[in-house]
Image 1 (spheres, rainbow, N blue to C red):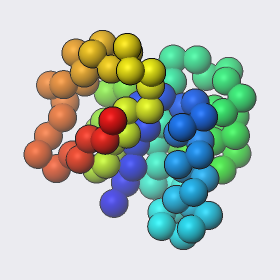
Image 2 (image 1 turned 30 degrees about the vertical axis):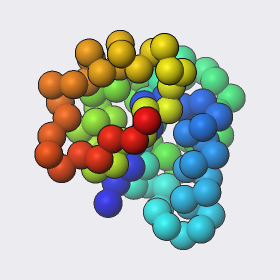
Image 3 (image 1 turned 90 degrees about the vertical axis):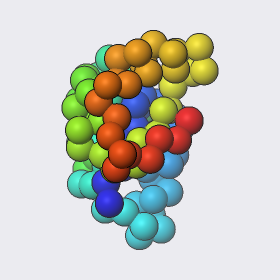
Image 4 (image 1 turned 60 degrees about the vertical axis):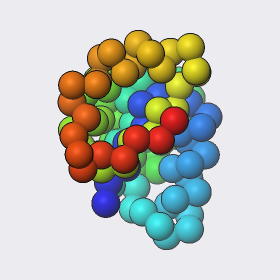
Length: 94
C-alpha cells in the first residue's frame, strides 16, 4: 500500500510521522505534493524519507490511498486538477 498527501503541511506531517512511528507504513511508501517546496514541513518530510513533488498528479499516480491535506476552500480546485486521474483503486480521504 502506498499513501499520498496532496498538501505537505502540518496535517500531512503529523499523519506521515504517525504512520511511520507506528510501523504502519515505511516512509518510502509515502508521497506528498506541495507547490511551496520551501516549507519547514516539506523539509521535515524529506528528512523522514518521504518522496516530495510539486505536482499533485504525480502524487496521485504513486498512491493507493490519497489524503487531501489542504484547506477546505482549496479542495474544489484540487479535485478539478486531479479528478480525471482518480481510478477505482484509489481511496480518497478528505
